[in-house]
Length: 427
Image (cartoon, rainbow, N blue to C red; front, side):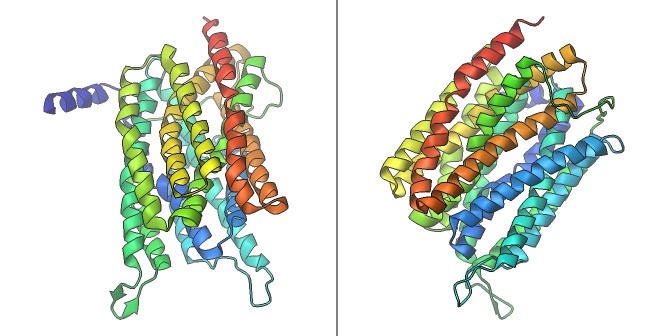
């Protein structure tokens, strides 16, 4: 066992300094992501008891990502991508802390909604989206330039392993802490679950600072500055944008649905953390092995497997709509996400390599348009949920919106296969 671990570390050490720097930075940021993706939604659900507020917050967050993606293109003329990347990491931790100290929207004694508080919640979502937008867009750019098609399976396999590993440890730890913190007596003050959230976000700020310190050790160069906003693209990139839209449709539900369903049908944050942790354990080793041994030719098998598993999970949730159904859905969701990302991101970056060479454009132009494609899909998914919840019922939306987006998502399989085939025709 020790020899195998040493061999894996030696292989990791053989990678370029920038690859190692990005992986360690992402290892640290992966500790924060479960807080953003799982527990913020649970926090809003706990304090508002309204799933539509969670969806509105999430939609605001996605709008913030798009705004930031455009702003980032301008900032790259003046700042290094790695500096903006670090700023996004720090800003996300600071906004998380701010959210935990603000008052959540609720109905007053006359039953009217506190609209100013709802707007404040959406504003927090907008700014948190802006911070994560700085993170994701610069992560794509730095990774694109630090890797090539042959080592991207390894890069995203390791990264997915980190995310899966922390999806075991962080949800269980945070869930247990939130379950235990209520009624603690600290210097005569009785703590609540909300106080527990505040403590956790303080820890995330420390982790964010550590991630920025690690990132500062890399030697990253910005791409040559050219025009980065285009409306028309090569047909191959338009197909990739369609794939991004399909990915975006389901992305919003990966964040909001587990928190809403668990808080509604299972229990509280402790159960949410335990379920996420168990599911993460199933996938952590799998994605590491796949990233280590899988070749570019295996991507479509991994891609299709993940999508089919997710669709099966939505069927169980919709048909059973019970504790068992929620648990099965979350198990499928956590299994699907790293498999999907492991295959999707190398395909996306390979397509950028091909199309940017054909059109002679700045790589960031494609990263920006990709974020817009993701946003359109996310907005469609979130609006579908909000409209079904408003015009039919919240229960109906939770049952069937997931099945709809899971079914539509299956169209990604033939589309991705076609994109890969077209990329391989380019020498």
